[in-house]
Length: 276
Length: 361
Image (cartoon, rainbow over all chains, first blue to last red; front, side, top):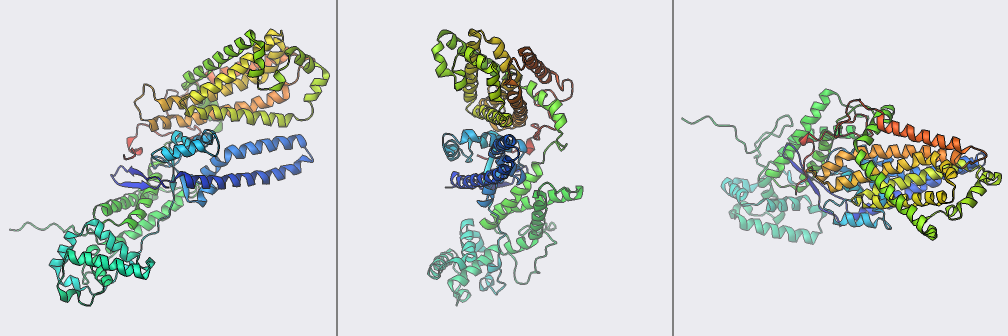
């Protein structure tokens, strides 16, 4: 179960969403951290045991201090060092972030970790889990006090538009008025459906792929009927590719290739001189 | 709704990649210091990518590219807006002689409340023991306090009793005391999240035990032993727990927000650095108290004269009072809500609205 994202608006008026982590993943990450902290304690404890032979009193004191420091300081140190991540959070792709999208401050890390004892009540983070499940931004009490959220750090790969950049002859473009009507009548959601179907076509099962493109093809054929000579010999998939080409690419084959140096503002025509 | 996606991506991609590189450098552990030119570039790239995101939202609805740009803008946003207001390096000495006592005084009301709750608890404990000595078994959690004070004093003052404490376990006893007391103080702070109720209960309970012990020994005419036993470490340990209680009450008050118009997140943001400062101070005091309790408090007459122990405790108390009450006074930034440079965590200026946008409903 994943809670909704946290939407933030920048001063420039741009909205972006941070995907939030749910209590389940967070508990798994915590379990990994608990094991890691335990392993660390055992390792250092082993080293201290060697000291017992020479200075038994000091060794015992060190053991007590080390246990306490790891128990209290593990989360603080890891989250400070890795900017909001512990080994467990790294493993599960989670990160602590400021609830307003700002950079995490040291004080916030300390606060959310000092409040852990309350969240861990009465057993296995029940209080924290319940708080996480009922608060809007999936925060445990420590997060609420420290003004932090835990987000999922899914590294978004940059999308690849190779499948639709065909560069082939598009028979539908021979009818500019129909192409314009197609753009006008297509809603954004229909356009996404067509584009996503093309981008993900290789992940579909062959039968499902045929069915899906038949449905989408029929839909777009109904939306704007092109004359028979334009669609002759086109499979549903090729038809949809031609439609997507019209919807998402304004230029014609004769346009110069895009240059990274120039900003393109498609559909903003240069201001015309006033007609006399 | 139509955007020439291919052309758009081809034109903008180099900027996105450059921004990604800059961010990766910045996010590496603190080593990514940028020059002025690079900062300007970062800002330009951020605004450009944000504009691309805005354009994508208006023209074409393409979820994958949109998610990619959102992630990029979110990362850059944190870097640009979240840079700490204070870039001065943290100085432990300044923190000790200025920041901690100033922070303590700024929230003196919460400390007063913690003292009051503890005193009420102590009166309750003392009354309970005075009226019904049988209540001891219920109130005292420690077995060594359950017996007759006179017997304990006699035992502790005998050479044998002192040697029992000398069994080479001072260091570990000291470490146990430090960690136990620090845990209690963390709990005292953390329970502040129950709007301060948990903190009240913990402080009251501490007060009850303290009051009961004092009443028990005073009624048994062992006040001198008690003062000699408790004062050397108690003069530091009890204030440390009270400071943790102060922090707990500050947290509770920020959650309740009585009489304040600032939003909850803003209130919490304002006190977070102060809470961390106070807790660090309490932890330091508890380290000192742990050492004193293990190495000094457990020695009694005839080995150590009570007068010496009591004066040592009183000296500590006066020194602590002077330190918390006067250190760093007269230096800048004492007024409430002011910047505390070099505080353990960086504080943000509450007067800069652009740096703290409100989450959308």
